[in-house]
Length: 452
Image 1 (tube, rainbow, N blue to C red):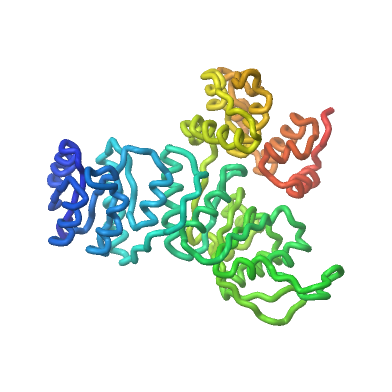
Image 2: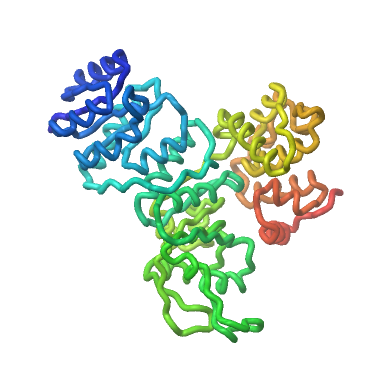
């Protein structure tokens, strides 16, 4: 097997020596330097397979060194190292050509796995390194958890190409934020055009997506271009794509396969180069197995898949989210930014957040307006005490695994309707779904909208 030639660009002598000894023991040929200038000189004078690059160097930032290293040695796989848990930095670094991103203190076992994975990728294909993205980062992806770092990596990798992307995850987790970041970092010329597939009735959604000709139906007094035309050379974001009816699934599949479609009532075949990014809170594998979603369309949508974790899986990010959301809410409402007691923060962190970030933001908006003396306390939150069992735990009955998904969904939607006294707008906020989607679930399950 070819010897791995590894370059370490790190200004901390102890870390540099530790990494050098570790990888030399594994049989790698290791070169170490401590600055940007030395790193550029090293790649100019010797071939390397891989580089470990520190973000903070005495003569500059590692992220600014990335393009220079890749100009000199285009095939170099670069892993960024930093002590900061900064998702935007991870996205930007990978957008500039970094192969991966690791945090300090370095876990050598995980680093070995990362390197092995990169080497396997390089052996499988000589992937071209994407040019730097000139787009300014959108500051909406917040978190330091491992799961959110994986999301940021997925965004950067998706932004390098034009493949169709599926963003999966529960309602309210921030799937549109991810879609916009992919568009932003892709450097495409066209617009970002969002469509909520669940918010538009089926009879109108076809026209919304593909447009219509004059006289195509009652009220069609003029030709109207659809979202695919509007998004040409840009990104079409199909939110809640799992709600598409079967005829529209077939039409979407054709566009993805052939890039061709016709307006409603028209005969002219049009083409679109729009990149499709879709999102769903449904399990498309389960939907396919149940016959509700086309398997061939699911494959077309899942060329690249990014999973957005629910808040309960990244509780360590909640304090960061609270801080950022309170700043945004205060600016939007024109009120002084409230502080929050440690007891209130504990309640927020312990809560399961079935509506995820959207539910958290709605709650913080309400309490920001009602906080006396500018302080958020536990009573204002109206959440269970952190010592009480959460709703998720309380609902975990021994026979839960034997119940169908529809039964669980029906019970949860009914619980929310009961809690809000049948208030549909508030129920939609908590559930993270549109009003038409809620009405469909009420009809489907025969739910009551008033407390008994």
